[in-house]
Structures are given as C-alpha cells and as structure tokens.
Length: 438
Image (cartoon, rainbow, N blue to C red; front, side):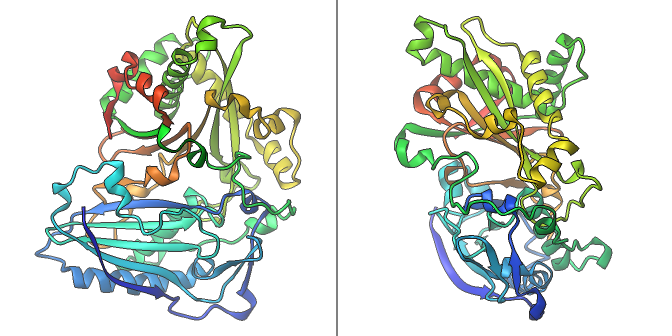
C-alpha cells in the first residue's frame, strides 16, 4: 500500500478559547496514564455520485474547527511533565493522504492498517491529537483519529468523534455532544508525576522485538450466542454471561493454556500453584454518586483484577466468568471514593503492584464494545469497519475487544509471544467460535 501525503496543516478552533480557560489541569487519574496515542480507524464508502472527496475534505476540516471550540484542550499543548494543558489554540495536526485503489482491494492486515496511522513512535508528549484522512482514489475513506491517552479514555474519544461527526452532517443542536470538564475537581489529589504507563513497566515491545505476534480474531454474532449458551448451561449461581464476559473468558482460558503448554517448568512440576491474572479496564462514570455523564472528559476508569490458578488439569469457562464478574463488581462506589482520595485496599494495591517475574501469565484487557463507534456518521453514512492500529497500541499479553458492524459479534486484537501465539492459534475450543486474521 502506497500512501501519498497530499496536505498537512493545523486545524485550529473556529473561536478563540476564553482567557479563564487557558489552563486545563489534568486530574490525578490522567497523570497515571501513558503519553501514548490510541488510534481509532474508521472506514467509509461514500457514494461517489453523491459526495466528492473535495467536498468531504472541506466538510471535515470546517466541522473539526467548530468542534475544537467545544473540546478546546484537544487543540492545546501538554506542558510541564504532563501536569496540565495550555489551551493556546495551536490546533490539531491534520493530514490528508491519497491511496491508489479501492478500500475493497485491500485485505486489511495489521501491517496495512499501520500505514493509515499518522504517528508510529506512539509518544504523545506534547500534541494531544493527530488526525489523518486517507482517501482511496478508487472509492472509500479511512479516518484515523489519534488522541493522547494522557488526556482521555475511550469514552472521551467516542464523545469527541461523535460530536465532530454530528457537526459535519449538520445535526440538530441536541444531537451534538458537549464535554463536561469535571474530572480534575473530582480527582484532584496530586500523584508523583510519571510518564510510565499504568502497568508499572515500560513497553515490552522494546525488550521482545520480533518475538511478539499480533493477531485479529472475529466472533460473529451466532458464535457469540453459542458460546454464551454453552457457558450459561454450566452456571449454577451466576446469571447468563454477557458477550464480553463470554469472549473474555475464552480468550483468557486459551491464552493460559497456551502459556502452560509452552512453559517447561509448569509442564514438569505444576507446583507451586501459578496464578494467572487478567486486568480489566472499567469505566467508573456510572459508578460515581451522582453518576457522571458519558461526555465527562478525561480518564475516568479503574482496573479490575481477576485471578485464576493455572493447572495441567485445565480451567473452566464458567469459573473464569465468575472471577471476571466478581472482580468488576468490586469496582463500586466505595472503590471510587478511595480513588478520589488516592487510597486503595491491600487487594487493590496488589493489582497495581504485581510480581512481574510472572507477567507471562498476566493479561490486560480493554473493551471498546458498546461504545457508539459504529454510529459515527460524518454525513456520508455510518462506518463499514472500526478498528485500531494494533501493532502500535498493543504490548505483550494485551487484549482489545471491539464490536463488529453487523449483529452482536466481537472483534479481538491480541499480542502474545510467538511460541505462545503458535499454541494459541491451535486451540480447538477457540477455533470452534472464532476466525483468525493476520
């Protein structure tokens, strides 16, 4: 895939930011987050008889400028070791490219997706956002939005992009989301400034290099229903699993079994018992009292840690669903209050301060399911596919879940060490429900 840059500019807010809003302080939760871009790639196939690319370009840039007036921190610059944003209206870096061919000509592997993303060092130390609009000259558009994790989470991304899209299509005012900037006042406790991520260690990619493999799995809606039914039939005290619980449990189980099969020490002597952990990102907006709106700007989430023993005898999906559900249930109102006071129980501290000599058996799960990403309509239809640049975003043992466009399916991106991935791809139970892609 050849990508030709045809323009590059800064898109600034259509109206200047008021003086009293020039300094936007990050919350204690923001300061824990890594200075990394999280790319979101949206594919569209506008009808060429209805919409020309020149008019799409003009519409996107004009509406982006208007949207940045509402989301003014995104148009600023991150300052002073990631402690605040100078809302100086310098703007968002905006790039347009041309690609030979049609979207349908390409099998979108992780390597090809990588070409649609404007930044690859994955370090967002100053500029909060970079956007790249890729025009396929035979038909199709891929819009890539990269926002620094330092200033927002998935809910923030979804609110911003949906607001931009609503402005672009000329939606009524009540359909155009406006952010609320209340995170800093709710989580004001200062923490030691750090540029490391919330796992407490640097990217394993730098250490492992070519030994890491990224794969995409798709569970279509029928397969997800069958998986939920299989697990539900074995549950006694728990309610029917959600699709995210069911898919998460199967991915975790399959990865654990692959890790066990490639661990000589465990194969020879399964004692002492080795514990596997899966650390799950939990949006806490609705767990606060009173609940926050989805449009609340910033990183407003916590981590739930589920644990299960790794044994040669195997693990059961219903047990893993129970552990996942129990871990998430502990992220409640009391937990949020402790977060606000920068206090954690011993068990919670353990989830953040683990023994990383055993990190080969620990996993990190982020679910983008149920966010309105497939509702993002810039005026030329809803996206055909929404995905991310897994090569840059994922580290060792990372798992990302996303919705599929049709039905109630789940798309999974996962990165594992090569020897573990080789075994993971052969898991018959997993192959019964999922289809693999590069």
